[in-house]
Length: 270
Length: 270
Image 1: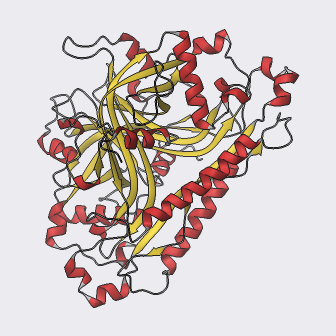
Image 2 (image 1 turned 60 degrees about the horizontal axis):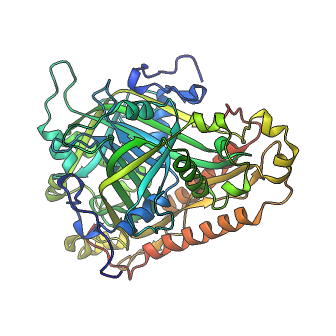
Image 3 (image 1 turned 90 degrees about the vertical axis):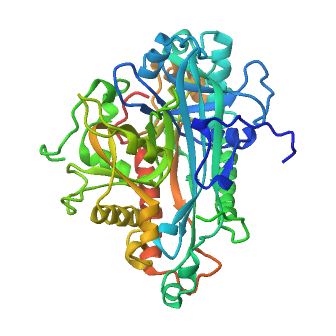
């Protein structure tokens, strides 16, 4: 990566302490993990509970002001929800404290599992994974043009090109029933593990242990199956924009899980 | 399900409002989703930040007092972490408020993606999924026997039988560097969507829209690849307990994604 790569500032609440060589603060790395994760986990503090609450949501990084911005640039996170859901109602009622940005403080996490790392002893077991967290403040998108931008962004994240290949634009009822949150990011971090298992010397030097415990990596990836037409589908063939995406995702998913398991990969002690 | 199935109590912060027919409060359903999820997302409020923080963690439901209890019974959630990680340090310093149970309030989420549900219009797009959240209070496990119980439980969740097929028991250094949290569950809920797309009448009655937009489900599941031996592996064949598990997971994963896409499945409006 060029040295011009942008990084998020390290904050006490957002800094990776454990296995810090696995950490990255590069916007490109973090945004890439978020954007390729089909389900994000979003936490917020509801007013009526002492529990921080997690919701599974769909979201995507983007920039309404500079739509051509790529994943290495400063972006907002757009999240999609039902207009009267708890998180959207809480956001609507939130006014920032005097010393804080406007909006509801949220944390957003994305995690990809790339492999089971099986070592000699349970303590050295690990996963190959790519995970990212973002911290920011959520506000409701009111502007119609920005809302449409975000809805297209999120639909095309499910399947690229799907927006223009479905019935658009949304009608008035659809627009008013859909809530879109924009999260202005304060900071974030990623944590990535790749490579084979790594064990302590006293186990590696014990021939009995090495001789009986299988060690290595089980690569893990997401598989997208053959599309199954629904009951009122009238389009005979699966459209190329859909089948090509499925084929590409399956191939790149399998390849990156294998690549992560590669013994030549640098592996900090797990 | 028999009517004796236990359910979690509905609380304002833990009740599913949107698409409530998709909700379940049955312990068996919720615990099954948690236990089959390789990465859990756990949120807590750190003392030095206004952001609820999410960590990806490994965890498993169990009962140290009644180890034979099944997933339909009252269980605790055990989570694994490094002994000086932020969540474990925060838990160590937490004393419950006067009117609350001891421990750190946490929310734990598990989500499985089973399919992309492609409808006529972006607003009717959805996922087939199984998600669960639990709310509870985390405390540090101090008792050595309980800690060992939890470590075996979590190792065998990664690969059944792995604990007894690796170098155990953990030595003193391993025991002291591993932190285990026990979460006493207050309540929880699950949300499940299955079935084909469902569109509004005005789109279904529009031959132009139905004639050009492919609708249906892309089934999604997790694939476990062929085990890749690590650099110091000395066991020639992949052991049957490992290969059999991989085969079983791949088969059941593909089958359940297909089953969820089945047009005969009851599908509440998406």
